[in-house]
Amino acid sequence: MSSRIDASGASEHQTVVREERQRLARELHDGPVQALTVIALRLGVCQRLAGQGDLEALNEELARLSNTLRRGMVDLRQIVSALRQPVSDDQRLADMLFDYVEGYRARTGLDTMLDLLDDSLLDRLSNRQRVAVLRVVQEATQNVYKHARASQVRVSFRRQGITLKVYVEDDGRGFDVDHLPNPGSRHLGLVGMREWAGEASGILRVESRPGQGTRVVLTVPLPNPPICVFDA
Image (tube, rainbow, N blue to C red; front, side, top):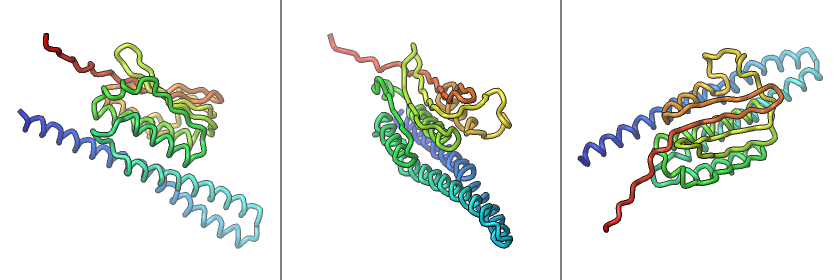
C-alpha cells in the first residue's frame, strides 16, 4: 500500500514540475524574450534617428526603450522569485502568499493588500490546488503591473459554501472582456490561468470594463475537512 502511495505522490510531483517548466517557458517567451526582441528592433530605429540628427525623436524612442527594459527586468525578477519559491508540502500556502505579496510590492511599487480572512482554509487544499492558487495569484498580479496602469491591487480569499474564492482586483484602466484581440491567444495570461484553474478542479472568471479596473476570480472546491475520531 505504501509503495502505491509513494508512486502516486512521485507521479503528481513530476506532473507539477513539468507544468512549472512549461509555465516558466511561456513567461520567458511572453516577457523578457519579447522585451529583448523589441529592444533589438528599436535600437535600429535609434541608430537611424541619430544618423538623421533628429534628437527629439531619438530621446522619445530612448524613453520608450528604457520603459521596456524596466518592465523586462521586473519580469525576470518575478521568474527568479518563482524559482526560489517552490510549493512544498511543509510550507503553508498562507506564508508563501505573504512572501510573494511583500516581494511584489517591493518590485513594482504598487499598493498591494492581502486579505486571507481564515488562512486555515488554505491548509485544506491539496498540493495541486495550492500550486494553482499561488500561480494564478502570481499571473494575475503580474498582469496588473504590465497592463492595468493601476495604483492599487487587492488579493483576497472568501469561503462560499463548499468552495474557496480567490479574488485579485485592481483599480486600473480595465478592458472589454468581450472584445479581446484574440481569444485563442495567451492575451493577458488568461489561457495559462485557466489551465491552472482546471488543474485545481476550479473555474476562472474575469470581470472588467474600460476605466473600471479588473477582477480575476478563481473558484476551487474545498476538500472535506479531516474527520477526528475520539475513543469513547
